[in-house]
Length: 79
Image (cartoon, rainbow, N blue to C red; front, side, top):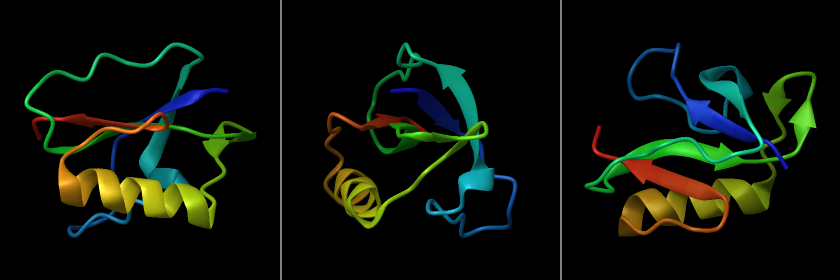
């Protein structure tokens, strides 16, 4: 399944559920350095180069960012 880097194009606070805020990086997870504080990348099904963000993935993103703990499908970075 492909990985997408979180590169928000909207205004703050950024919408992590908006597929337009992600860039396709390929099938290898991108490098997301420590400390693990903010959203870096997600792994999701592809829809013409944009991620399909399901309710389950939204919950994983929220939990990862809130708890500062990465999941199988969500990676974090310093800022």
